[in-house]
Each structure stands twice: as C-alpha cells, then as structure tokens.
Image (cartoon, rainbow, N blue to C red; front, side):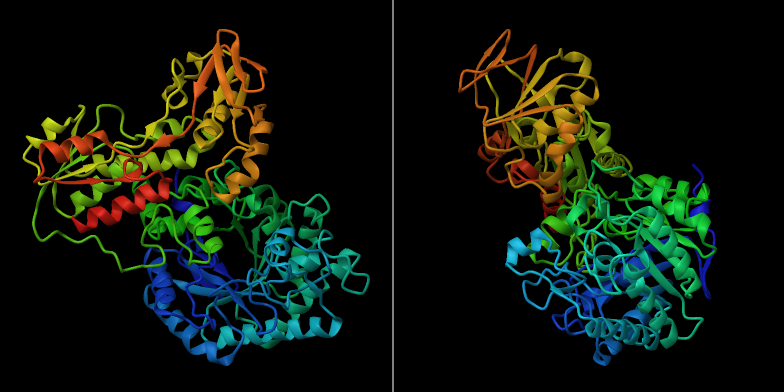
Length: 634
C-alpha cells in the first residue's frame, strides 16, 4: 500500500501540520508529584518530536487541585506555577521540529490515588476503584459543576500562555465529561441529567468557557469516545449529534476514540481485539461535520493508518502505544523502512500492567528506553570481541543485533527457523502484532553483519570456537507428560485430529486452543487449577481471554487435574472422561540451561551469560529488556 497519504500536509483550524500523523495523548507518570515538568518528561516528548510526527498532543493534565487529578506523577496545568515547565516542554518540542498540543482532563470517577474527593456525575461507582480503596464517588453539586467549567477555562488559558499550538478537552474514556455524557454513569435528575441535551450540557459549557477565554485562532480539539461500549452507555447517534454541536460551538477538530476504563479492552485494546476498532464510529461522525476528524485506536502499523486516510475514513491519525514502541515510527514509515519499525504488540505489559498499574512510570515491552530517553545509547564497544549467541528467540535475536551494533563479531547459532518461542506463540492470526515483532527481530539480525549458523551448538563447539563471550538464549524447557505431544511443537492444525484436549491453562495452552479452534477443531482446555492464566498474566488477558476462548467455541474445564491418558481421551482426578483423539501438553516451563552449565565446566575461563527464559521464566518484556541491557554492557 502507498503510504504517501500519511505525509501530506494538513490543517487544524489555523494550525498547519507537516503531515497527518499525530502522537496521541498518553499518560506517562513522568511528572513530579506536584504536577510540574521533569527532565524525563521533556526528554520523552523531545524524542517523540525527533521521530517526525506533525503534532504531539501531550498527556492529560489535571485542571484543578480539588478532584481532577487521576494518577500518580500526573502532569498538572492547574496553577500558574505549572506554566514555566510547560513552556520549557513546548520550546523543546518546537526545537525538535514538531507542533505540540496538550490535553485537559478531570478524572471524574476514574481516580487511582485512593483518596477523596472523587467527584462525578452520580453515585455510580466503578467496582475496580471501590474494591481497591473502599471509596465511592461523590455527586457534584451544580455549584461545583460551575467550578469545573471555570477550571477548564483557566487551564486552557495557561496552555495558551505556555505557547502550546493546540488545546484538547478530554470528553472520552470514562473521565468526568464522559461520566455526564453516558447514561450508564449519569443518573442525575437535574438539568445535567436525563435527556441527551442535559447530559451534553457540561461538555458544551466547558467548550464555551474555553472558547471565550482563548483567542479564536487558538485551535481547540475535543476527544470523544464514539461509544463507551456499555449496553446502556453512549449511543453512536448521540456522539454524532454532539460532534455537530461541538463544531457549532467553535471546536476545530474531533479526536475520535472509544471505550472507558471499566471496559479497558476497548480503550487500550490488546492483541485479541481488532485493529482500528473504533473506525466504524468515527466514519459515522465524519460526514456530519465539516471540521477535521482524527481517528484513533490501535492503528499500530503504517499500512493500517494509511488505509484510514486513503479511504477518507478520517483526516488525521493518532497513535499512542505504537510511538512508545518506536518514537521513529513516522520517519521510518516515510523512508519505507517498515521492518525497521519496532512494532507495538498491544500486550499492555510494560505500559500498563507492570507500568502504571504497578505505580511506576509508563514503560514499554519492546522499547527499554521508553521513559529513559537518551539514557541508554548503544555505543561502539571499547574492544571488539568474538561473541556467540546460542538461540534465536526474542532474547537471542535482540542481543545479537545490539552486539553487532556495538561492533562485536557475532555468530548466531540456531538449527531451526529464527524466532524461537515466538514461532508457536504466533500460530494464530489473532497474534498478528506479535508476528510483526518476530519479523522485525529477524530482519534486524539478517540486515546486520551477523554470521548465522544453522546448527546445534554444543559445549565443545563453543569452547573450541575461539569466542570471548557466549550468550545462551535457548529458552525455557517445557515440562512433559509421558507419551503426550507438546502443544508448542504442533505447527500445522492438520496434524491433529478432533476432539483435542489441551492440558494446561496457561498462555501456551490458551494460545494453542484458540489457534486450533480457529482452524475448525473441537477443543477442550483442561486446567488443574481454579482458573486459567494462573501465572499472573497481563490484566487485559486475565480479564477477557476466558470470554475470547468461549466465543471461539473452546470448552474450558477448570479444577480438572488430568491423571490418565488413553485412546478414548483423558480422565481427571474425579474419574470423569474428557473424550479426545489428540492430547497436547502445555503444563508450564522450567528455566535453566544444561548447555550453559556444560560450557562453564568445559571452559571455565570463558564468559558465559544466560538470557531470557533460559535464565528466568518471564514474558516478552523480560526477554527483550534483559537482552538489551546485557548486550550493551558487552
């Protein structure tokens, strides 16, 4: 597909942009506790600007010091004291060649700090927050509502004074304005509840107040959820009508996304959700307004983003996680270097599960430098060494590429296809994002002066090979059941016969069940524990993957300890038979490397380092981060 549509100049109100690519606002928790700007935050946005997008919209910033702050280390715009740091941020991004906007936000009921006040439209609580902190939201009075309106207007003026190029009001994703817009969260009986006109009143009052406070030629964006995806939530017809009203009120662009935090799989869609999943919604808005529409939500790849623009589906595209994965996404796409783009795999691990949800700053599974920009450059080594890397899974591939970039003489041993554990993990078409990472890592190795030896490397070969350093990245060792095939070893669904029982409800078992069910097999997933994904998996997987399996027709049997295997199937500890013509084992893995141990014994003087799950069981984040930091020290 031609990607040139991504790089056409565009206009939002008075603001001219060099291309149609926008960095979507996305919280980083890189600010100080008082909301002021830090060097880390400036470095993050400066690095994004260097990657070539036309516009960067800075993450949500809280508008008052009462109840609008949502999360730890959130950026603030609630006081005049915030302006100097924001101005510093603006100047750095401008110097790097991009335009910059900022998003204004009141968290409403989505407050993750565990303290009152939590102010929202009505007493409809979000069970996740309430169960964590025991706090329920308080209903805003009409007088307090007017204070919120004034706070947005004051914050917009601060954005103007800091010399941002655009300001955006956040009216999506389950924050305060969405709490009023959605019938699901708005049970009020006054003039701010009930009818659409009443539920839209606060958003329109905020827009009117902002527009009255800043010059007319200062571009104003509103971010909307096309729907919150609740059964009794925001219907698309109301979003379309709201967009019309916003245009009439002086809004210059509609930034269309979707979902809210209680249905996180729609707001920050994981790998099993469609790409561009809100497209159906913004395509209903676009014909009804004359101002531009920004499409947002899992656009991920240049091909997907370009198709949105080429088809006329939207006027601009915004990307969040994709640019955390690779801040040079835009530049590489423009240069046609698609396999050099580090792809977002929509895992929600580094950014959310082990990032913000854990109380840390935002990180990224595939980009160890996210949030630490400029801190970990890959520089030429002081001494060139002969290095062997054994195993071409994610850890081995990443290490080999970094070692080559440092100038080392690298030999990669892999008797099979390059990709390691990523190969069985990407059998299903639903793992297209992870397959993109596999292809990227392989390309990085093949495009560098790395000798690839398609042979098994034993301790003697390595000890006698004249190497200065050996990295063992042979992966974890799967646990076996006597006489039962390993689920990970099946490469063609035609090689199994239905009905199939997959023993083990971890990620490998679930992946295998989804893949085989998608190929038309009758599949039962048998797990001895009380639930599947019992190994502390990413929260979006743990919450929704059971339903995904059910939708694919996979029968899930929990509390089903398999004790016998026969020609007619398997029997569980309670004596029940699960019919099966094929039984596959996915009962977990053990870390450790017999090769590394043998090599240390054969050549005690040789430096040997284990990487990835050969060193410790983990996820893709652990493999890539560990390999990166080990290799840059070599």
